[in-house]
Image (cartoon, rainbow, N blue to C red; front, top):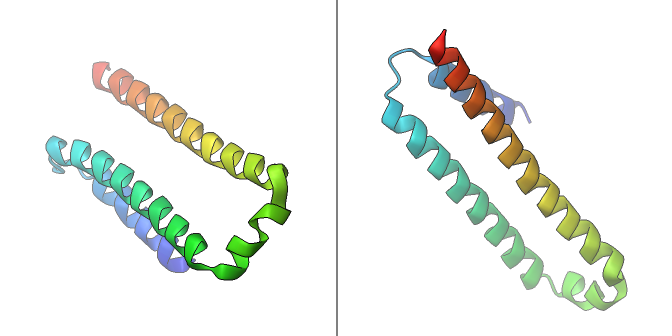
Length: 96
């Protein structure tokens, strides 16, 4: 957990560094999206490779499916909202 927070703080510091090239900001966004997709793919592979989980899928029912879909949809919406907010704040900050 400490490693996760350290990586986040390091990323924040680098992103706020005045000499950080603007082109890398766009690259960082694309890299984050690619990493998220890779993580979701790896999670699917891991679930699919677990015979116990796969055997229990019929027992889990529609509630588990709806919960998982809701979590994914909520995460995507939260990220989109955050991106829009930070872009708006960045534009407003550039005007003053």
